[in-house]
Length: 284
Image 1 (cartoon, helix red, strand yellow):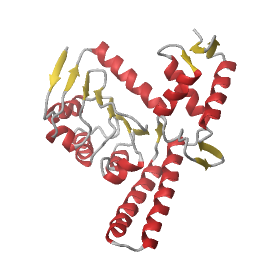
Image 2 (cartoon, rainbow, N blue to C red):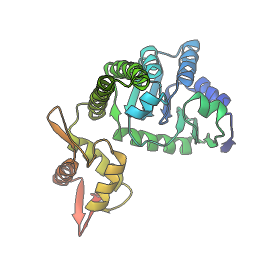
Image 3 (cartoon, rainbow, N blue to C red):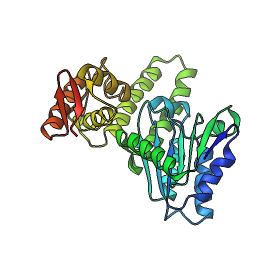
Image 4 (tube, rainbow, N blue to C red):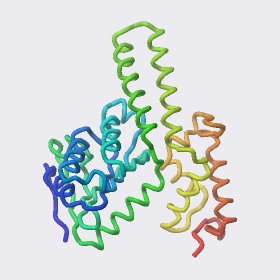
């Protein structure tokens, strides 16, 4: 059955939390402190902090962190209180989906923030038939495979970077001191490197691209030029044509198409994709 959800929809989110027994999937580009605190309080009250799996897919891009759209300290708190929490980082994420076990799934316009739940005019649909919920869950977890796992060490580093840049930004805005503004730009560039390092999470560029190619080809055969465009849309931070950034010996930026070609060769040799004419497709 499908139930239409208008605003506010916080009560339905609370029902999701109250009914979860094994696994909670939360997918939203913006994650705020209020819903994170609610999640922790509910799981503590139900004594499920040690028994529940929480999967969070979000966008930890620098602008989201600095603007406060996502509260990384709140995410860290969730991970510390609920040990079986996994947080994955995927730029360009726009889906907002919340799933309790295989029982209930909400697909909505609302981010996981107080504004999204309580103040903005949002709209969504609740599904509670197991087959539909299982399909929605599988699709979101497949999106998660394109993202990078962010552990507690990285989350703490993000908290520190965000706090430092917030403080420095306020000082720079109040000052006409060029040295201060230069220092802010320098720290910003360093933050970009740390965030990108978290994005690759120890993986090679071609490994990330290989997963993305398989994801894209599930929808049908594609030409290389179309694969490249789609990969750049999914991973804009790894496929920036304006910069050649080297992180841990790997090139990210202008040379990203070399990584895609390497991934294509690897997948073809492994027998997972094949080329027919000018199109690549999955091997049946």
